Image (cartoon, rainbow over the protein chains, first blue to last red):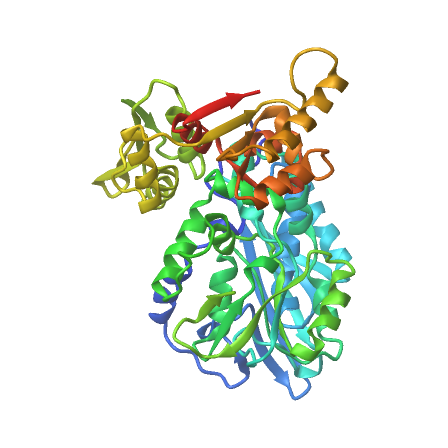
Length: 345
Length: 203
């Protein structure tokens, strides 16, 4: 694979699995000065998916940026995934994507048609989202990286936070887990084609439709998108130490092959970092089957939305979302705070 | 003991290479040189889950020498220790049946398939029942959705017989998500089980 056309050959890790660990990151962020601007409705002090800035009474801007190195060999596929992933934060907040700027790092000696493919893949997805590319910035680097800075808008100034779930609400997860594990198996040249196709289709899939459905009159108390930190880290973030979550492990949507790959220990570094982070937060997964544990920690690139919705409306929203995201499933419920932030049913 | 230098290689490559080395029939273990603690932890999960001995030495901040030994239960979970004790003590286990094809015997294939169905049905009538039935290669198809053997296998499972299908085989035939009887397992588990079986019948 080491040749000048391979975009993955020089990459030590790809996709959201390359994210800096949640624990390491929050320690660094705490050391930065506190900015205060009352119009900054959501900043990084709350670890939300995107920043929200109020322009006037009726208008709030949602702003987010994401980029990473390739997790797939095909540059166009990589471009699609990078764009779907970058825009996802806006949809996780219930917003509408307006425009995006490309961010590119690319090796000087590599065939530039590959860069063209990457950008075309990204543009395809921006177009699918009904948004526009407004510009960008590119530099030479020893490994390729691509992503976008995305600007969206909160309709009527209202948006959905990731840390405000109401007790009694159900949690819907819209995409299957296991993308990181399947990509690890692919790196080990063990993955079967069906599993890779399922993982790629899931990563390319826009969270737009699911987001539009949840904002169409449902009582949604919180939403986030699943990233390299894995499902369990995101659930912990969502509980914000105010509530607990009971997770329905039998209902977790998964890419089926990921279960056997996990049992064969085809695991990522990011998944282990997530395991370390979660164990420091007082969640014990010891009673769960090994593969289930690993799926809960599995780093997701361009993962699904995790939506906290009124229990009376959960089935109806689920049905609406399953038309387009057929793997969506009710994976848990929000319960009053107990000692363990997450327990497993 | 073989030393694997996987410095600079991302997960899961160190684990894959270590597993491959440990699967060699004559090996007593492997030394793995990795450059980060996370890779050490991923190797530890594999070693503990497989019942191997595990230890590591932090030679420097980005150099860790991991030792994984076969047949040493140090560091293994209690169940794995019990399994290893059994193996060491040579305690007799029950009957284990290894099914390595989707037909029984050589000759007309159609006949072979009918015979295997009859064979599996007859197992349900055995007293005492086998302890485990392991499905390899074409045999993996017998536990998959739609196979003629599934109803009898589910009956055996209901009576407490352990059914295990080789994960690599199911994966190869693309039927991993269609396995409906029993669980999927790996070669190390299969080898462990057949090595401590009281009697083994391979068909």
